[in-house]
Image (cartoon, rainbow, N blue to C red; front, side, top):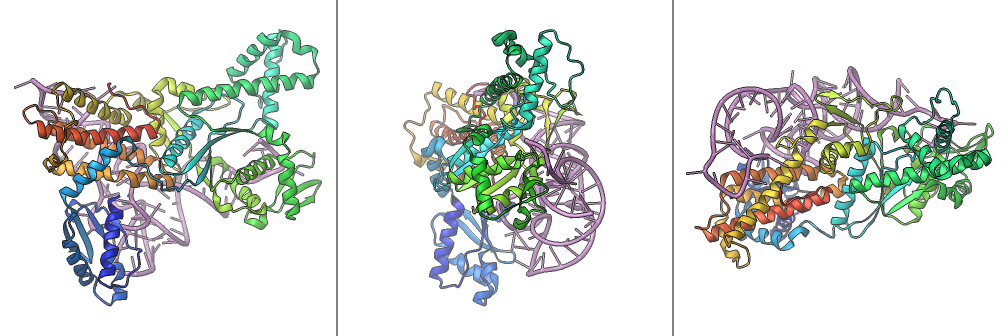
Length: 550
RNA sequence: GCGCCAGUAGCUCAGUUGGAUAGAGCAACGGAUUUCUAAUCCGUGGGUCAGGGGUUCAAAUCCCUUCUGGCGUACCA
């Protein structure tokens, strides 16, 4: 926000001085306070083409800046940096903008309404959601919220793999449990079948509806009935878990439906038309190696069935047909081997592969008291998303999943997430919000409000601590844009934690409400109201509640 | 073997896409409550940014290479 202003000012000065320049220079916030509020390397990058030393060039630019009103100072430093300090008045002016925007501060049209498809979670419909899905849910949903906040038009989609091998195994697993219920001895439960308790519960539930009726229909009908029942129930179960986590989807895309609507055939025929398929060893292959994949891939197996790859191509075909500008797939790390062939298929279909972006979320390790919680599907001790929410709460879970950048492994400390103290960053942020509310309440009791506030009083906000907080808040809009562009919502967690920290320190050092100094009280109230709004907005964007009382 | 991701303080992680002297929190130690919420604050110590080379005014950041860890490399999904 401020950076763009400074940038504009620099450009207009370069024009008026008749300098040759390119606009590749940057405006930065130096990490040493002595270097001012902002700095630019413009003189260093453009010295050569003006045949001047960077310092000289910088000096000329600085002269023009000294006449400008929003700047307290402009100085040449080191090898040719220009360091700026903005005037207090300027910061006060910006603060009034934050207050005026309220919880809309940071909202922007930056994304220009570009249509974005965010596909995430897309867990197999064969059991309850686990913690990996929880990470994907928190990540995808937060990115969704932020992208929409900065002007994109984003959609959330969940792809249900409700066809193929695994759902057949699911049906068979149900059947075994169903038989068991009716007193049959099923012997050892097959290794590849689904072992979880939920399978028994589903069989039980089905039995309540159908009783022994299913023994009297054909095996095909029975399995189909069981499959549909299980898919329905599990889908509902997953939806409920996501709902509890504050995550909804605009669309649930079913693989079965894609198959019924003939999209698989459509995709295959396009590939054939493009002469990108061939037959060999009784199978039909895709020339993916022509598009950068390391080898060709089978589309139709020699037994006549499509590989899992085909519905995936078909699904992505629909993504492109629906006209999205940006298509984001959020995947687990075990999928990166298959992305080259998917991208190959998109190219073969004649679409712009650059519109497809893959975000890989790395694995999660759960820790309890310093010990890693071992999970294995075989042993059936997978921690589900519901258990996690029950254990640490929605807010903490979401925060911890968002807190780390997507392509890094995540160590989740269960004990810390549960802890209600300053060690726990979630509470630290929420507490700052609650504290401010409490101060506002106190102020009201003392008849101090912002109703009759005169912004000329803002000149009383002259403490370095106060100006630093305003500076930090002014970064907020740019950070949201960076998040949307880099697809890295963890930056918001870092930002809000810092802001909360600044507030807690401020609180300890200065008294906000003091009836003896009405004007000063109002002024500080004004400042912390801005802080509160931004914390609230940040927490909302992360799907975390912003309590008024704790 | 090949490919992808990661390696920053004892631990968990940031680092504004190449900027000036690399930052937080936790853990350790010492302090603060007649005060708007102590779920808070103040202070102290802690680094060969995995190693080496290169690119340039400038590298934790970009390129090459070695090492370590995770994952992938099916006519499975």
